[in-house]
Amino acid sequence: MTATSKSSTRDPFLILSIALSDYGSWMESERRSLDDSVLHFEAKTGMGALIYDESERAAAAEHTALVKDLHLCEGLLIMFERIVEFQVRWIEFMQKQHDTLNELRLGTSILRDMKQIDRPGNHKVTTSLELSASFSRERLEQVRTLKSRIQIQLSVVANLIAQNDSRTNISVAEASRQIAIETKRDSNAMKTIAALTMIFLPGTFVAVSTLSSSLNAFVPPIHFPSHLARLATLTFIDTFQHGLL
Image (cartoon, rainbow, N blue to C red; front, side):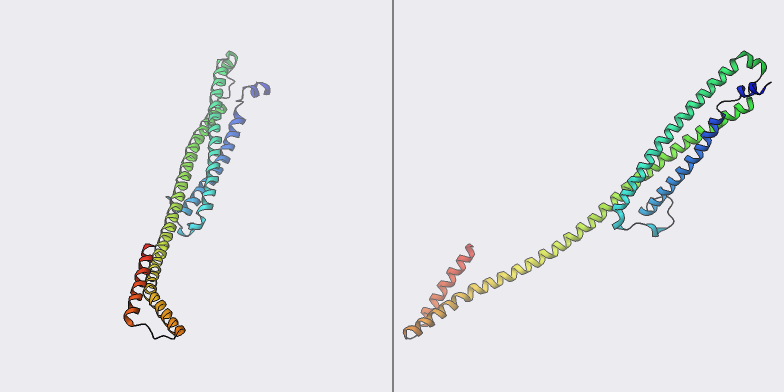
């Protein structure tokens, strides 16, 4: 058997299967990197199955920036999911083409009679493609799980932000309540001052006007009953006017 005949019967999918295996190893390293990122975000929110260090939990002021990072990670996971889905379909397509090639090669009478097909090499390629397909499908499920975990973290951060906003609103409401109490106290004080003013202002006016008239006309002062009547009249009028206002 010549070198040309041997090379013609070798599996042409051998190099492709090796390339897919190497590419799968690189994809797995990227998947692990994304897994570490998800674990980091779970430590930041404090909500996750594997949290060993509580000191990494983000403060309330960091939640807004954390939402941005979570959305970025979610976008990377969606893109990676599409790549892995394409990889799964591509390997399945290669498997079908490889099976079709084997059927054609086994159906060729010359090769079947001469038994020139490299069966050990063919079996290795078939096994490699099956392993690549299995790893890719498992990787796809892992990526979808990571995406679900990131979406959970987004919900957790949104709830934490809502809780912080509720605490802030409660503080503002308590401060408003204190301001209202102080305003009511000031209002009561102003009412007291207004009442005292209504009582003493008419008397002051009558006294000043009486004294001024007496000094200007050089007449004896007005009798007390007349003064009291004028005072009562002016006080009643002043009180009535303020009551209407």
